[in-house]
Length: 114
Image (cartoon, rainbow, N blue to C red):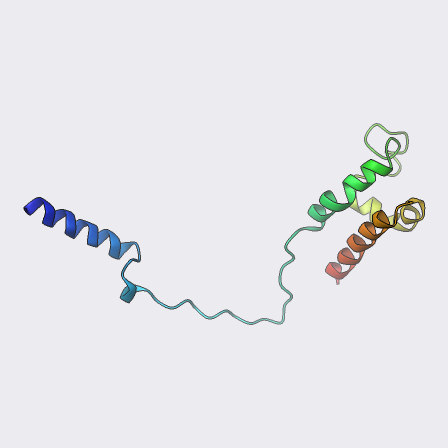
């Protein structure tokens, strides 16, 4: 009998320290409101790697990828290069969806820089 009492006391102690006691809970602190914009969910590089880089690797291979003849001058795996040559890249792309993807990335990049 004594063993069961100790086990029950031990279990109730664990429950209390783990937050199982509703009286011991406190309400969460209120969220602070700010005029600052919320942080972007993805970095510019992550967005580039996900949406733009595969598109350019598909459409601009073999020239603008590592080992290509134009890679040293215009590496299309670098977001800065792509952003600075966006007009020419958009002119050369044939698929409207590809153009829209790059334009959306450029728009988000510009918005985030402001």
